[in-house]
Image (cartoon, helix red, strand yellow):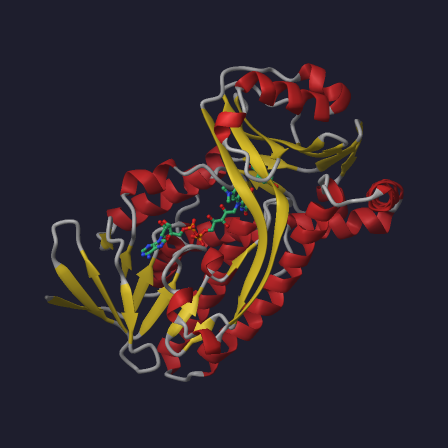
Length: 392
Ligand code: RFL
Ligand code: PHB
């Protein structure tokens, strides 16, 4: 067994783990990354698309924003639609800021390339990481490489960046953590298609048949979603069924949709989840390992990056002065922001989807909420400041 020594052992080479490694490197702090799956699998995942200012700043701090700035699509507004009626919230006019569209796939690629260019060790395809001694000054991570070699990392800090299904959260004894969860009675069927997007801005639509979302990856590639029923799989959705549902749910705009053969189709469940605290001894959780938001509002990756920026600063301060205070504040400060983002994602999900258990009363409430926002400057400001990203 080989023993590897590093300052920060990072579990997970998703966007959180990669950004953390890159930010630490900029501050002269070394790390090792252990990833369950292959480089190719990590690079092919299609997820987030809409990025807040703070996420762009994170990529800039990491020295990885050149391609993002060259290729991203700025969005100055967001469109809400209810039973075919639409209006736009002028996010930039209200807040002074905008969001951008730049795929998570591209973020991951830029970060992996930056890590590799400086020789960062990433152990791919190591699915059996085990954490130990987390409450000591030398926490350890043991894992096996695809070649069958066992390695043991001796670190000063372990960063749990291994997503919702990872090992890090589970390594905190049950008596020392508490989960808060809500699962929603539907999923999102996502489709990627090489056709120009139906509108320049993102559209969130509530229709009596269910939710629909129109987004994009470029001027020629669209990313569309529809609400799917619980238990449905991609096999239940032919492309004809998807286009019929999607175009109907968008109302008049639906007629302008350019349909085509999807190049990817997948279904994701929707859930809200927070595990408290985000620290156990020298283990720190960041991103989806600690919390999940439903994708309505496009917050998951943005929230993960906010955690990682906060954690990197805490580690850098701690290494500079040797004081524990910065590390101790991490969980409390991160969670304060996490709950605000959970609230917004839950709120927008609640307003924009069809819930099987809803009576006519809840449906009227959704409609009244839509009408209120459409007619109220204050209502639009609330959505706009959350959509563009709360201060971190
Ligand atoms: P990830 O991306 O899940 O990465 C975790 C990594 O850890 C690895 N791993 C392990 N490694 C070692 N040992 C183990 N035992 C391990 N277990 C797991 C995994 O293989 C993986 O590589 O978490 P991370 O880095 O925290 O990033 C979070 C984001 O990926 C997520 O929040 C977003 O994708 C959410 N999300 C969106 N976020 C936005 O900000 N804007 C959006 O527009 C947006 N749209 C979305 C989304 C998520 C979606 N899905 C599919 C859930 C749209 C969708 C449809
Ligand atoms: C996306 O572009 O994939 C996207 C956009 C907005 C969301 C979620 C996903 O709320």
